[in-house]
Length: 272
Image (cartoon, rainbow, N blue to C red; front, top):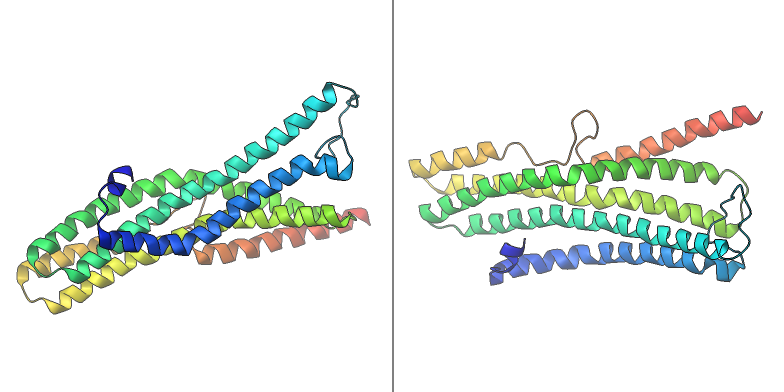
């Protein structure tokens, strides 16, 4: 990324700017909300006149100094550490978006290719981008899998806690945590879906060139190009995590609701 950023051409800068306008509002808003929640945790003892940011109960006396101050500091620091970990997903999503940007630049080059040399250069870049995309997939999928597991546990737990009687502030807190968990998953599914779409568009652009040129040498190169592009780059872990996409996100939401409904029925039966 650093090497590429030092040699950006004007037309490539236009593509990057288009993605910045598209993605920055969402991800910047997420970072702001995450740190706002952490800051809210820090000021909660002052607002609610309670010793600690959370209502955690300890099996020993904590209402004396310096124990009270140490526990309060530990909870606030933990809140900001968790926030930093959540924001790490923004950087992982950035890697996926960067791969999409490179493929879209390749599409622009394919559309403007006028001779065999330019076409062969596009084919070379395509091979490099496929390898780069696979590296991105391998690097980001562990983070995506951990995020999905944590989000699932957090969201279902918060939904179950909402079944109990709580104050309005606490209920809004649980809802906010649930929404954050779902947003974390969407941070990955959105760029992953776009990457699949962009890689497919590269094949479509090559096919359009295939229809316009009649040289056998170019045909053979384009056939190899299109065949290599049949399999899209997906963020997945075999047997553990399906390919991330909008379809997966919709299925994920449905699964969350199914788990919540089942556990709610079990809890009601136990109470009866």
